Length: 346
Ligand SMILES: NC(=O)c1ccc[n+]([C@@H]2O[C@H](COP(=O)([O-])OP(=O)(O)OC[C@H]3O[C@@H](n4cnc5c(N)ncnc54)[C@H](O)[C@@H]3O)[C@@H](O)[C@H]2O)c1
Image (cartoon, rainbow, N blue to C red; front, side, top):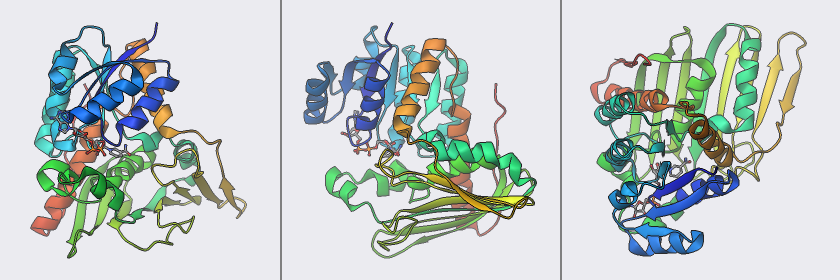
């Protein structure tokens, strides 16, 4: 039987969720957006019901699950309401816009019966999964570098018009470390485990650009240098198109680099892994088969719902990205290294 879905928030990202649900043979039964025009347009495209108040959607007993595609500061309230209504949740990143809300949401998931997946879809990029498979071949990891550079997403600001919530600290959470950066913080944990503490510097330049640097001290003993920025250097990156995003890990037995793709082009730009093996001194570029990571992410969620088991990345992974961001911004503000509080999985 097909899983029945509601979509809360009909802005830019919902398109990717809808595509995933279609591919997973799920049935879209309801969409909600405070903007009536957007809600109606999606409802017309999917021949489903619509509302401007998402609580109406949540009262509908037909749905098994919802995707929460609202601005970050609204995720907690919507997710808590969905869990209270007995719906499973695929929640967009970042999980919330502050650490307090993230902790509260972890508690709500622990207390409820819902499957909760956080939408860090870069874990589903085949090159990221290949890199994870190769990590043990590096031996003891000595150091890491994570970079997230890309042009300022002007198209987004044009589209959202007056409500540029991404740039508002209360609503968005802060700068580029929160937006594209949080995916790579999650990917960094996916590949080499949890950080214990961070020392960070965040630069807010005139205009709207942000530049963040952070040194994460990892539980395994090595340091990862992380940098993120909206930079209008339009030929940077492995494809010379301005999207310069990668993870590099160096170990006693080799090095791997993962090069990702422009986030909206998961099926046209092919992410790959560059692996240097100390054993034979060779460097190989490995191109896993192309898969759309958004489609894979939604398929994993639908599968978890069908099987009645918590999926991955889960609410604790969502919390950890939030805790890393929170500690980095506090480190910058207070000028000292900050511990990163981890939560025990229940
Ligand atoms: N996974 C990714 O790569 C990725 C990419 C882009 C955005 N996102 C995330 O997706 C989420 C949404 O981002 P977006 O780019 O779609 O934003 P958006 O501004 O395009 O869309 C948000 C929508 O929410 C609606 N909305 C706002 N308040 C509402 C309310 N109270 N009730 C109902 N609807 C309401 C708005 O009208 C708007 O249509 C964010 O959390 C963002 O971080 C993730």
